[in-house]
Each structure stands twice: as structure tokens, then as C-alpha cells.
Length: 203
Image (cartoon, rainbow, N blue to C red; front, side, top):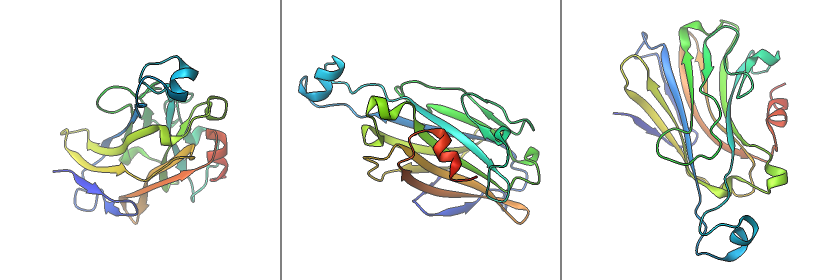
């Protein structure tokens, strides 16, 4: 049975399961439905009762001593696979609609180079300034970790804070702890308006 984490909690991934290597990181979110048929959203976007599509992009920062040292260490919709082959991104989902994960990232823990000490999972809203969008327009955001070898869901972290006014999220991290890997539930919203600004925090 999967463990449900709260913000700030940390858990061992490999200490009790040293054979764990191939994991799937699933991230999901849903657009908030606007109420009624009128109102500002309806007039702006010509809709009935649906808010405009919010295009979220999930990315992975592969950190060396907690820093990005080269562009190949950023895995996102424009660079779907790390040069070492240990991290693979599923590609971009433009709307967040539908059940299940919106974006998925495959990680092979054993293949991560020894100089990489941490993977940070972030989500930002594409073109958020021009579209006047923030994470208050989304709901049910989560990250989950699944053992790819047997399909077992290991953990889930639901991001339940109020992220109104925030345009990026630092969702979680997987980091080395001695010879093991641990998962940390972060869930911090930021006002970084694009991926470049997010990455600058780790340079």
C-alpha cells in the first residue's frame, strides 16, 4: 500500500528495498472549473463553465552538489532524456485534463552518475505572464512514485496548499543519503515565471 506523505516529510526509497532501481514519477493536476456560464473567465475565453487551459510543464533538475552545472542536467519538454540515460521525460501535456498522470518521468536510480546528488522535480506554467495564469487555477496536484519492475505504487504526495499567485512549484526531490536514495515532499510555490528563472535558483 502506497504511503501518503505530507509537506515536509521525507522517506527512504532504497534502504528497505536495495534492489529498487526503475521508478516512475507521475505528476498530475486538474483545471479548476469556473462557476456558472457567465463571469470574467467566460467573457474572456468564450467558454461556458470551463476555465482556460493551463499548460503546465514538469521538469527535472539533476544537481551536482545542489547546483545545475551544465544544461544537459535539465530534463524537460525540450530535452527529454539525460545524456547518461538515467532520466527520461514522457513529453508535454498541454491541458492537464483527464484522469491519471499528466506527465511522467522514468528514473533509473542505479544509472544516475555518482556526481549527481539530487533530482529536483518542478512544475511551471508555460507563458503564464501573457496568459495571466497561476496555480490557483489548478487543483488536485500530486506527485507519486511507482516501482516500474512490479507496478507497486510506493508513495504519493498531494499538493493541497493554496498556490494562488504562484506560477511555479518545487514539488519534490529525490536525493542521496549515504549509499541510499530518499524522497522529500517539498510543495513550495514560487513566483518564477518560467523554467529559466527556476533553474537560476540552482546555479
